[in-house]
Length: 151
Image 1 (cartoon, rainbow, N blue to C red):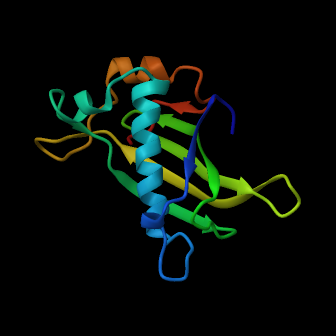
Image 2 (image 1 turned 135 degrees about the vertical axis):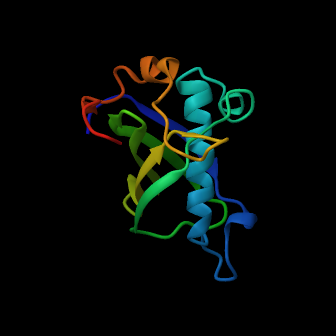
């Protein structure tokens, strides 16, 4: 996986945790969704709110895999990361992760997610090609660009 990495620090809050005091696993998906929004807005310089609002484009997840490696607790300062794995005609394959302080003083992987997002019209809910400005902003974020596939 090559390309630029987008990162965002986050402190684990009470609202992220279950009664056991650890992050309730669906909360990682909420964190990742926020990371994708920040990446598009700040990393790619395309306001995410404009994609959904005036442009009527969505980026729903159509394929999702998560591997949970270690727990996160309230108060942990973690780092959320995102890299582009592949850019298709209408889709993006992303790898997202959360790392936190490890027992040896380094960083440990808490969770890694592989996600495929598809650009859709919010009017028809059907796939549409990635818009030109988004495709241009993605240049250099992945070595694997495949416009020949039907995705």
